Length: 287
Image (cartoon, rainbow, N blue to C red):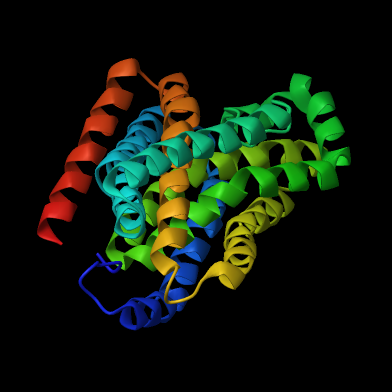
């Protein structure tokens, strides 16, 4: 781990800053992976539901495992280094549920019709009976774009901050978020195509929506930057990592796993979940 307790605090601070570009690059990759989903919607006629089901389950497995085995323990340990062992543990657990509360509130405030995580399939692009509703959605484009940005903000923060703490862990989370964003790209492309009848415009607008995550990461970084010094870096990281663990766990249970089951079969999503946990466990042991 980068945030090690035996290191000099100035060295920890320097390492944290040195990983800025890596963290931003990983967040950009995760966010713009909506373009993969958009491309699938552009060139494909059918949704490979089984593949998406396994992939989403895999993504959930990675995020759940790394949240409980790495991110939350790291956040608690950072807080314990500054406070007492019991105080750090209590603060970390409370912040974990605060993170869950924040993302749950965001999810609650976004109407399901505008929520990009709602399941849509490529086949719906040929369903003329749904065109009227999707045109209405397009007329609310600015409002929808804002909803996408708000919903993806915590995901961008999760990737960015995790990468600052440990780039190798950030890579795993970025890949998991990227897989998660593929069906999101499809979901954004389908209604836009109905409004414009242009697959290319649907692709580019959906692709651009992925910028919400790196932009959210930058805004989040600028918000916490004034509070970061070599002396309090561990406290800031402890607070943020504990909350991010809650965000990622909620996303996994509320969005990824239900979507995986809706796209495919129950057992496929579970196989993907276990595979994701296994790969994440192996990578943590090896690296």
